[in-house]
Image (cartoon, rainbow, N blue to C red; front, side, top):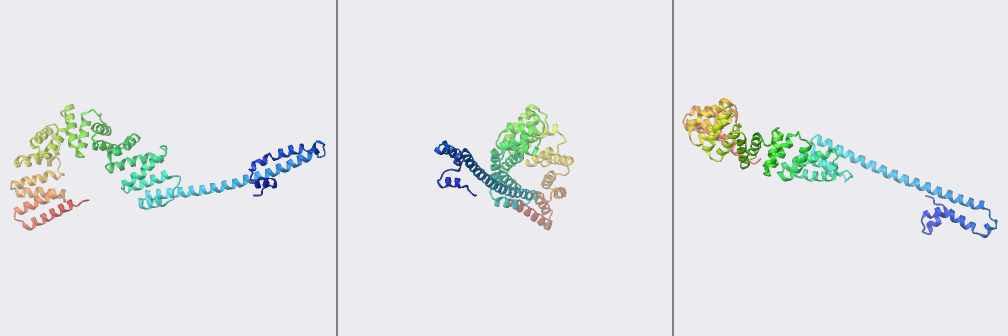
Length: 399
């Protein structure tokens, strides 16, 4: 840029350009102080001409400066727009890859992209991609960054909270999952999946009251009702927390002594703990209350078979089959009972029916092999023993 001569003098002397703005006034003062001026030898018009020259120089300088600054700002704005366009394109491409199930490609694209001002969106997409890959450790890593950087008003914030809670839950880090699942549950109260995960976390952390309240809400029950205690206990049994389930079931019976399924669960747990007499008594109570419940008859027959009471076992097992003919359990136990009673044709018939329904059941094949062996059908028995051994070996392999 061209600098006016008078301003160049200021530059050479190391003075700021702003001082030039005072130059016209200094000239006027200096001129008027000269003897010639006082004697009117130099007319005032000369002073004004000098002033106008300097004002024109300053105006030109300022115009050129503004133009230069505007050009620099336009260049910077263009670079920012270009960067923003590339950033948005990367994010959109990553979204398309994730939607298409190409999570590895999306992760590579986002990982190799330069750091941008929109890191919260990048970390969210990385967390989403890793979650879809079931790599929950990396999902937690990136989603934790997301919720710290992303404003809660962002549409993806809720999704990040939800994915973070589920990731912690699936990693078995239940205490860490709870606050995120609680927040998601408030945002999505109708999501049974989130409610179930939250209730399960409460069970895993042995908070029976909160798990009962959560499952009661899911099943539209009053938390203080007998049914809520029953549902909570069923969930506890499912997650192998029988020691927590038993007090819930006893409370359910206290509130409603004729509530179906309560005695059944108590009887089932008693049989698991080899308390066979107690289990039988509880199952008989269940059948009195709920006579169409096939599983109660099945477990009653199973309990009698464990006591080696073969004849007593037959009737409840048959009733179980008549009520629910497509469950293999009672057929297998009946096959075992008939084998012990040496009624080989009945035993074979029951076990072959069980295998038709459940071809990969080790116990059914192994018992059938014993029946065939006792019937002196050695080749058939060998085939069944081999099948049973293969099933047991495959069952022993870790997933």
